Image (tube, rainbow, N blue to C red):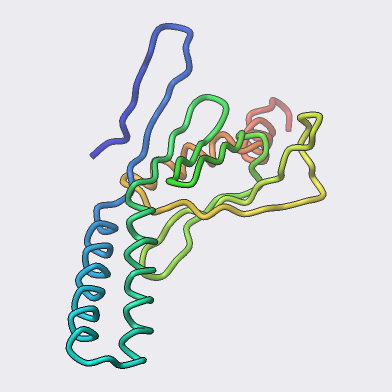
Amino acid sequence: MEAQQHQLQPGTPDVAEYRPQPRYLLLAGAGLLAAALCGWSLWQNFDLFLLFFLAGSLLATFWFGAQLFSRIQTDDRSITLRRLGGQRRIEYRQLSDAGEAGRLIRGLVLLYHPLRDDGLVELDELRSLMLPAVENQEVLLQRLEERMPRQRADSETRRAPGA
């Protein structure tokens, strides 16, 4: 399934939305099933270990559910991660690096420089943001790599005549 592309009108930015992989639904469902089984077992006979496992199952259900309902949107200037708790927008000029990471589910990790109060990029500080694994992740990674300042400078150097 391709990333949803919306060409608004001529001269408006190209916007693409990326949805999380469906396996988050499976993992959230497995966490919910484990929590239900732990709750039923605790109802029958209280056990401290089962109470701990119930808490872990509920935490996993919440985590995978939150990832399932997040959205990633790109336009011509930035990438935006929308989560249940809010959103984070990073302009391409802030990006330092992007790549895949993770074991169970390989998501994208963005390394970026925060913006100062005056709107300039703070090059002395580096932060990271883990994105959920999305459908067509290769397309998103390629889009990010094409728009990173370092990548643009490298490609312009290669295209420059006499360089």
